[in-house]
Image (cartoon, rainbow, N blue to C red; front, side):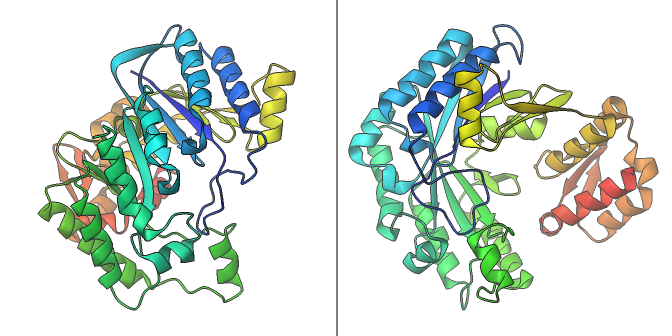
Length: 379
């Protein structure tokens, strides 16, 4: 069944590593909620008439900035235009500084049944370096408050590869996260994007990221700790207790259609993508004054779809089904990339069994490079 994504493009302050679309001015928040409700109406047939939603995901930005009344408005609009599966996964991304006891009681009274909390670190200097709005104390406190409020399905985010003299801070961050006993972890290497504070500092020589070997070692440490604590790595950056995957994100990686609403959001219907304008004012004006969705459409060629499947499937524990590539997209990697596939296995970067290509732990460190090589071979 398809999913629904709603992009809430507001933040209290800008994290120094973030290049997502957002605004730190909240003046348009109420109007944007109205515009999201209008977009729900205008795009109710994008997936299929009266589609039943299996997942709903409030991403951002910072969706935890929404008030209870704003969430009620959005859920009322969703119910008017879609059916929701009885056991649907409904996720809200949240920042620790928003998750007071009162806020969590409001969220627990809503249809939301899963929280994805952006902790990033339990180390105060790293939080300050990244310009996070919460403190190290908030990181653990908010999770415990969420659990006390009745939320059991919780994911927390951590960032590794932050400049440090050694690996001790990362070891402490992992230990603190495991102590929370949450069923899901998302762990990302710090990436320096050009149009961010870190990117600008890097160009000026004011920021020095750690060497690749340092980051790779922290990833290896993570994999060892994950296994020791009974978690499974079902995607390169995502880990869960058995059976506790993020259903919404897993559907992305499997190529399940979804409708994305809000500025900069993407949608996918199986053969094409739509991209909403990444501008809050234009988004609101177009929907509330012109009754039009400000989005562009891209029809995907068979090669585009094959490349997307390669990129997403190789990140997962399920791997890339070469038979599906042949049957759905007309791409025969065994013929077109025979030598490269052999090299992957010889170097212990991937395994190939029953026509399924799966990256090893060593190969996961090179996932982007391996995927790019396969893209190039597809021509």
